Every structure is written in structure tokens, then in C-alpha cells.
Image 1 (cartoon, rainbow, N blue to C red):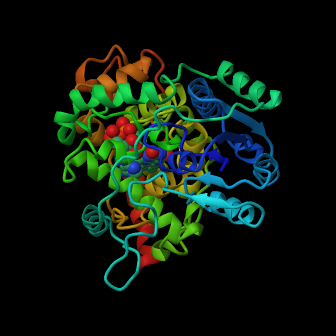
Image 2 (tube, rainbow, N blue to C red; image 1 turned 180 degrees about the vertical axis):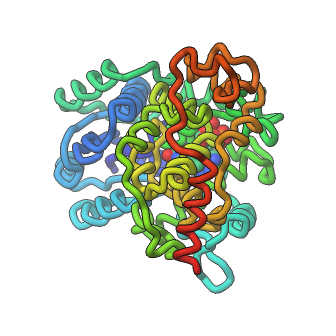
Length: 436
Ligand code: FAD
């Protein structure tokens, strides 16, 4: 029997259980719907990345691409046929799919996660609140083997909307910078190179923004160009890399249980906290001109390549929330606009973790010192010099402390916009005021 495979965050052919389920029933129309609501909320880099990966999929299989509200488009394309999908678990995706299920027969197989949200609960059937306990249960639960790849997928060609194709091609042309190679072949090449290279030292190297020690797979995982299960099949379950993939599943689980936590404090730990709205300082943070080298390097890396190293995401997030006393959603919104891996679960809960409102949060009183963090994780200053050319004349770790050197400001690097020691105390005072 003929059916529809509707691709969303699973833009791949390999190890795709929903596609497999559709093909098992007979001929399949493969569909992608460019949803104007999601498109409008994405910045140019995110649009380009999505577009490049949809077009890469369309190069591999006959994909029919439409533009419009899925609530209208999907029933029109389906014409009474079953519609296969991978389960969507974000608040927006769930609302959309619940509404569509009234109009078409949606068949969900698999999800974008190794262990789908809501699957892992503690002894009393409740979700885990703490990552380490979740990760233990996640390993015990385990995951399915990768789905067999279709030999010659029986996909029926169908016409695409010219408007949709135009929007995708224009988005690729308008990419603000060079994007990583799109599509699953590029993703697999990157995974194999990482597996045979940096993976061996990942546990120690992953915190070093000056080294290329992480996989850089997050933009692919975000769109399902690769599935985490395919990576886990190559890994020891107890490996550090598997634990990082568990964080991704954990935050999706947290969001699934508490959809409101996308934009509201997950925990009332800081209820009543006083926040500031310092426009100029926030603009300095966004543009990488705070005068704190590691913060500025990270914020410029974000603007210039749409990705930032995890350690520096933590440092820059801490700077906005603790040094500038800004409520975390302001920063989360900015990251989501620019990151090509921008993901509401990982990003917004990563922010809440730093801010002290999230799951087993770093305690509020642990305020990152941007100077000592910089020296510890970028000991030779290479990362700072790569992204902040005004500091490229300062050798070694001197790049982290231009104020200590006569020539520190000779290339017009900005002066520090706040005094970290004072702002740290201010953050602690505000914390005392709400925690007593
Ligand atoms: P690797 O170190 O190679 O890790 C492999 C994979 O594990 C990643 O691709 C990612 O899917 C997952 N992973 C690793 N660390 C985490 C983590 N802490 N939380 C969730 N998943 C993790 N990750 C995103 O994918 N999208 C985001 O929008 C995002 N925003 C973040 C915002 C803040 C404030 C913080 C502190 C972290 C954020 N992260 C986000 C997590 C992490 O920074 C990125 O996943 C990582 O930097 C991606 O680079 P990589 O693929 O080289 O990671």
C-alpha cells in the first residue's frame, strides 16, 4: 500500500526507521514541508543550513518539497494515505502533530534520540531530575540497533513547489559564511574522521577550545542528518562521548516533561531574582566587545561560523547572566538565532544550567571567572588570537590579560565593560536576597 514519508528532523536515508516502516508497506512519496512559521523564526545561517541539508537529501532521493502550513499541506499530499514520521518531541512539534493527527493517519516510528523522551523513569515512575542518575538508567535501558538501510528505496517522484525550491536555493546563496558540508555523506565522513582521530583523546581534549578535539557533529545531529544511535553502535556505552549524547537525550526528556521550561525557569530556585536590562552591555556581549578576551572570542566565533565550543558557551553564558545580571532567555534567544546546531532543548537547558535555574544546576555561587577560565582552557591564547585579531600581537597567555601589558590596547581592543570581581559580588548578593 502506498504511503507518505514526511521528513522533519530526520533528513537522512540511512538508519531511518520511519522511512523503513513506510517502505515496508509499499511505494512511498517522500515529503518535506517548508513551514513558514519555523522559517520566519530562523536567522540566515540556520535557514541556509536547513536548506542545504534538505537539498542534499533531494539529491539522494526523489523528494517532493512544499511550502505552507503542514496542517494544510500534509493532508493534501497524503490524499487519505498513511503518513510516516519520526516522533517529534518539542512543544511546537507536538502541538503541530497532535492537530494533524485529527486529519491524517500519522504513524510515528522512532524519534531523533537514542532513547525517546519519556521512556526513562525512576522507580516511582517519575522523570529523573539529575543527569548522573538519568545517564545510568539510559545506559541500562539501551537502544535499538541501527535500522537496515533500504537497498533501492521505492520512492515515487512527485512535483515540488517552485516557491519552496526558490526559498531553499536563495537561503543557501544568502548563507552569511561558509557552512560545513551538508548531507549525510558529509556527516558520515566527519564522524569517521573523528572516530579514527580525535575520539581517542576526547575525554581530556573536549574542554580545549584551542584544539579541534570535539566531533562538530551537533549541526548534523540537530537535523537528524545523522542519528545518535548510528554513532552509539560504534562506541563503548561507557565512553565519555556516549555520555555527551546522553546529555542531548536528557535535555530532550526534561523538555518533554516540562514544555514550559523552554522559556521559563525550570526550577523556582531563583524566584523573585532581580535582573538588569543593560542594553549597551548586552550589545557588547553580542558583538564580542566586552573587553574579556575569552568571552569576545566565543561571541565572535558564534557570529562568524554559527557554532561555539561547549566550554566557551558556558563561559559566555555565565558572563551574561552573572556579570551582566541578565535573565537567561535573552542569551538563549541570541544563541538560537545564530547557532546552526541551535536546539531548543539543549540550548535552553544549557542556559538554565549555567544560570542556576535548571536541572542539577551548577550552584548559583559558582561564578565562572572569565580570565582564569580562559587561561586554564586556552593556555597558549591560540583560541583568543584566532577570533580576536586586535589581540594577535600578544604572545601566549598574555592574550587573556591585555590590561597587564603596555601594548595591550595598541590595536584598539575594547576596555573591560564591567569589573568581574565587583559583579561577582553583586551576583552573590542578589542570590542571598532570594535564597535567604
Ligand atoms: P561533541 O563534544 O563532539 O559532543 C557530541 C554530541 O553530544 C554533540 O554534537 C551534542 O549533540 C551532544 N552534546 C555534547 N554536549 C552536550 C550538552 N552539554 N548538552 C546537550 N548535548 C550535548 N548543543 C546543541 O546541540 N545545540 C544547542 O543549541 C546547544 N546550546 C548550548 C548552549 C549552552 C549555553 C551550552 C552550555 C551548551 C549548549 N549545547 C548545545 C551543548 C554543547 O555545547 C554542544 O552540543 C557542543 O558544543 C556541540 O559541539 P560538538 O558536536 O563538537 O560536541
